[in-house]
Length: 173
Image (cartoon, rainbow, N blue to C red; front, side, top):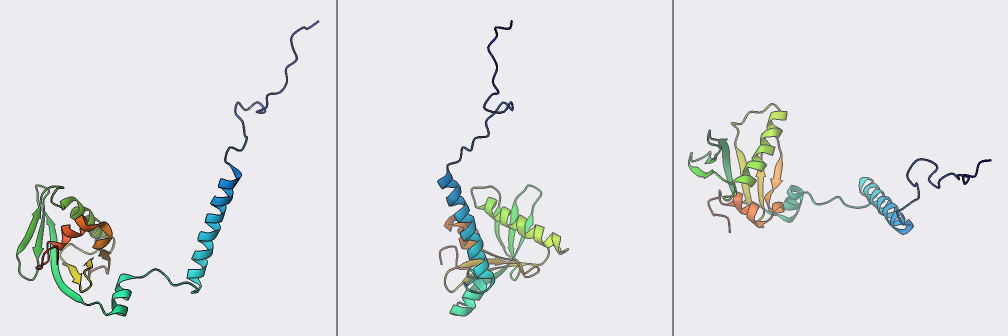
């Protein structure tokens, strides 16, 4: 006669792990509510019940903000990795960005994105970019060749200043 104790099936059904729900129900309910709210708000914007977020160019036109200063610039790479910033209208070199500490890292990153956009449109690097300081103090870098514009104030004061120094009025005007 067999005296070994009878084996019962493990609670995890032989899979070696439990399938018990470990996320609290209130957390799941809140996550579901967040998803529902996001979809509802998106739908209300799409059908026109709620206004879309402000588009900078549209808001400037609506409020009468004008261009205070516009400079046409080219950004070219040197063999040593430096970026040379040139005013197209005067031919003057406005800056040579060598390292990260001079704001060159941010400028390089922005210009890499702009160059990628041009490449996707089959546009070369010769066309200048427009750096504009608006009458409300905002700063925009625009590529007339692709139509892409970047609001530089969105990246903080230090990164904004990395571009603002290329304007005749300087970074703090």
